[in-house]
Amino acid sequence: MKESVVSTVVFILLLFLNTSLLNGQSPPGKPEIFKCRSPEKETFTCWWKPGEDGGLPTNYTLTYRKEGETTTHECPDYITNGPNSCHFNKKHTSIWTMYIITINATNQMGSSSSDPRYVDVTYIVEPDPPVNLTLELKQPEDKKPYLWMKWYPPTLVDVRSGWLTLQYEIRLKPKKATEWETHFAGQQTQFKILSLYPGQKYLVQVRCKPDHGFWSEWSPESSIQIPNDVTMKDTIVWIFVAVLSAVICLIMVAAVALKGHSMVTCILPPVPGPKIKGFDTHLLEAAP
Image (cartoon, rainbow, N blue to C red; front, side, top):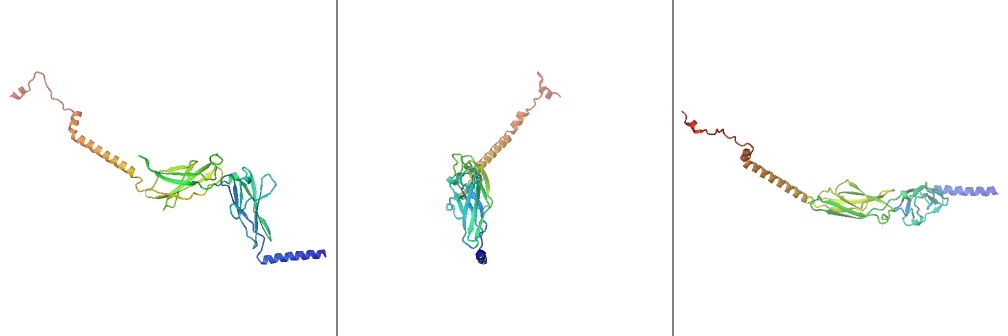
């Protein structure tokens, strides 16, 4: 009797499984954690890609434990950063601690789990782009014009206390150009560009990177129009210098031409004729 009941249960299960397979239903596919990011080394978020759902509603959970601990925890916040994500606020974020994170997918046919992801918040920092990028064309007296730009660190990053140190990179190009010109600015939040093409509209962007971590996205494009006469001041100065030099040269040539004879006389004075004291030259003219 007992064996009959067991056989019946097994038969029903196999029949259910076979029916489900014929209907295209199956356990969920293996999910994948594709990114974990911290914008300021104080919180972080992980995102995953679901696998195949097996034709059935599938539930996803993120579980984690800290290295050296045995207790497993579930994601504290599935909402803040959208679908298929888990956000760890300051309360749940520890620095210099290794998190071992796994995604679990479950439906009526079974379950599957992702490969574990090992996360140290210190090394996944990817800040937001810098903000408030401003551009200004400077034309100082007697100097070449230049493009001056200034920006501020991302609003979430605490750079004043030294909790996070950022480095910056700028890129710019004329609007119609295809390639960007890139400049490394170090830790300063202002920069100037000397080489400009007159009459061009320039596009400029800036991004930042922490000591340990990744470059941010580029900031939104800012633009500035360079006037056509941006180099006119230098041109006028050089024309004036050239004309003045030519005038000086002409004056010198004229002076040499007019006083050439006097200059030769000064350099090579005439040799005086011989004279003997008491001798009258007119006696020579009267001699037969």
